[in-house]
Image 1 (cartoon, rainbow, N blue to C red):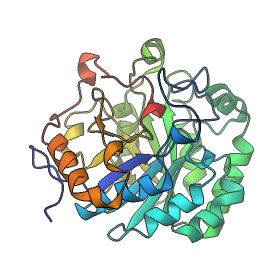
Image 2: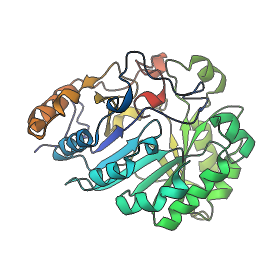
Image 3: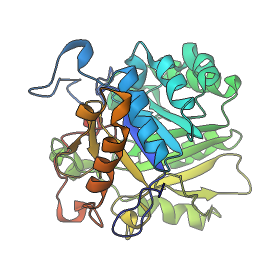
Image 4: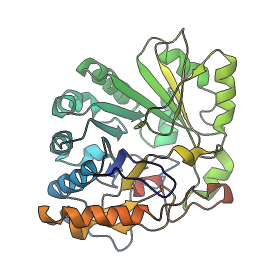
Length: 331
């Protein structure tokens, strides 16, 4: 079967699958007031995709060439069946990589079980190495526990551990040297993510946005070299230095041609296909996830939706689409 491809000849090997939009942290750039169920959403156990629905959606994407699945949230580990979700995705024919993005609060106790279940890569959010500032940004005084979780992940055997830090002017943008010193002797990729404007974060964006290009210039001036990007890699520009075991990735959605290499699609925890993090609405898929015999219809709907994918987002125009905050469709 032909791989997923849009009208701009971009191929899609990478699925970001949200399994819950609930999160127990209160990060300033995402859920500063804590998690609140979306207006009109279902309550209880049926609010989010079931294990069988997850199996069917991943099988459908795998049949169309998807090779990498990232499990996101909210905080995905809040699902009681999260280990079973990992096993289900990892055992899907065609899926080669299973990753997750986490705030790390359960990582210390679950890292080995998740690795054994088939998880191959981890992204852990660490927005500051200073405990007080970490608390200020995330709303939780959990830096020690998160750092212990990262150590547990490395000990469990994970070869791909990435640290996500959202750049915030006046809060953590001065900590580059501290971060670089931390990864010098660790096989970790540190990823600085440029703050993105969303529907509920206009004031925060105006006050704290800083361009990732500033960090890029500092890296290049310090001897860091940019690397080539793999076909199922995320959007980060990755840099290496001969004196560092760790690497640095920069995610800069406001940079020129950011969308030209787009290779990922998103499915929300409510079963909607999102063609872009900053798109409008979404395409309902859940009605086609009730039984295994609906795979052809599921794949046809995904392909039909992809034909309408835009060439680029409209962030440069101040248009963040219908996305209220990053947790709503898995970031």
